[in-house]
Image 1: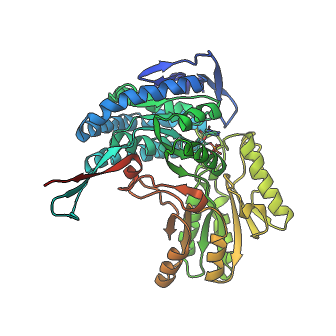
Image 2: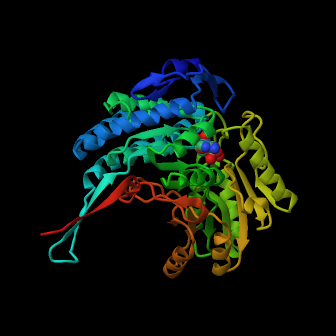
Image 3: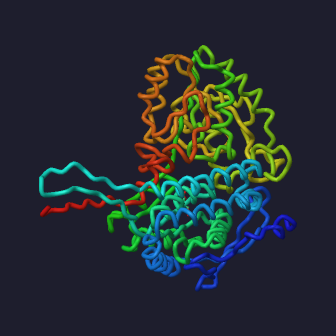
Length: 487
Ligand code: ADP
């Protein structure tokens, strides 16, 4: 590991506020460790409320100048940042595999995916058109302009340490907002590396700030309480999202919430089973199952249940679990010990209630303390805890259903509504089921749906707002109505 570290020019241990690298005023630091082997990577400055307030003030000052630039000027700097991210793809991916654990090839994929949001919103900056609306009175004219909402706060999780930041920073900066980012304290190194590249790109001091610390409550308290912050964009768990929403209510901030999911993946008996198996693998086991759009409940129609399980098992037994830097590894570690025990609990509850582990079923102890075997459970039923909990691990529970109506009812039987997937070759069914699923996103004969061109987001308790696409920038602008009278 020392060799990898010595190659990383983007490795930073201080936070980035107002264009400078800053320590904690308390002098405190905390350790970042590698989830694959528990090894210490680096100590990072542990900032709190005081420095977060400074970051918000710096953002407020910088935003005034930033929003006054032309869209083209902002777009040019964003493009430079995008290019630097791509130029440093390997270094960023190494940092990601080190601190987060995902296989190196996947980490490289995330860097490219993350950069795509900067590229996309650089273009969108120049399309923030207002309207001239047909008037309601002869002597008046009715217009709208779009203006940046103001200072934005972003609180992001560890499972996509780069993409969850660029999805927010891209549109915020494009719209003319300044941003204060609090990354997860599990994965701050990618966030700090992104800040270094923004600095190199020439993004002005104060426009993008990264505050790293372990006291999420204190940092979050400032970001949700400070009246200067006009918008919070959060990606994380539903309980924390609800808490932050209630905190933001006090100053009536705009919010975007990308919260938990409980994605159904439905395989109908008219599906192309081989395609369904490939889709399930891509959707379920990516990032060792640690994504909010991972297939969480695989619902299979009774006529194809056994055949599907068998085909899936044939593929899953070929997976290689281990350190993300090792050749051929497809399943890395889970993020921490709590994640492992949650997955263990869900699997043991299912097995105690009658499910069978067709593949895997326990910790992959030979790989290390934080690895779980890629697992398939059969005979899983709605009364098991796994039906209603986000697994966030490489475990595929297979539920059996008889009719389309039953499958849709099972799929919708959750307070969540982020991603959903189904496989069918019947066009009438494809329309019916697409319309009936209470989800923000539906993959039809497709297991990977995320892209910067498409609107990502959930309904029900999975959140509000959309990231990416032509809609993503709307979250960062206010529409101002101008009524010109006396004409
Ligand atoms: P996950 O289970 O993915 O870690 P969390 O919702 O716990 O999801 O964390 C997502 C982000 O929210 C992280 O950056 C975390 O530090 C932050 N966070 C957790 N609790 C709070 C809080 N009370 N206030 C502000 N941020 C928080």
